[in-house]
Image (cartoon, rainbow, N blue to C red):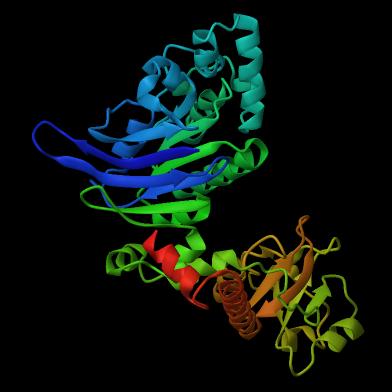
Length: 395
């Protein structure tokens, strides 16, 4: 565990970058520091590995004061990932990744073997090993940066806006890759970002900091979205926090129907059976059950079968049970028919859901979550319901 106790960073000119910050960063979790520019996020991160020395307070790593161990030893026990990867341009990819193990005295063969294993883990093709950073895309370079930080198997990984310099599509892919790696390795990760969506997606705990280096709120993402500590936090989260909160509700209990689903090679009788008065559109699938698009039921009935070339787009489907109600709602809103298409892990249709059905599932999920919170508060919190929430707000 990393414990930050009343830490302040004051520069010689009197500027206070971090002001009496206290945090407990749990082992094996992703803790995200988020806030506006100038709020002390990066300074806090750099104080953890002593790239910046604190002015007051102390930081404990597994109970030991970090200032009481050699700074080089401390830094080598922590992986560090920054914007634009910070790679050595004159070294190959495999040698970039092997940098820290070589500094720790590993022989060249062992360090390179470790580097090649990590390339596979972060999703880099082994054929890139002998290339140089300038020969890689921005997303690939960031993967190299993550691999290099993991090379000596450090228990702590510090990440300073590592994905901010890549485009949104690559960024989302890298975020998913980080979550996959974290699920496998269980590192203690401290992640800095200015993007609240990134913080909500990645963080087990999120620390919202305000200008002047003060902590505004420290809470799990779901709690942060449902109960902002004050007006500053609420404004920083933005108007979309209710929609963001749907990311924590699974689609597993969503009621699906297969009534409008029909194969592209269906007979006229099968099409007529599906195209009832209550089904204005039919979802057409290929022979393997994967979605092709929507057909107007009135056009399909009495025709010469279903013409795949004339179909409306089925939009982006969601993976049933794995994706959230937010994903399902997004799919329904973007669909030309107002219906979301649910698929399994292999992309085969398992059913569809209307916006009305999804709205009902959202109401049920909110009610269930509230009921669960009330039961926990009544059972475990002195003073009855609401006491637990009060303690969380004060934390």
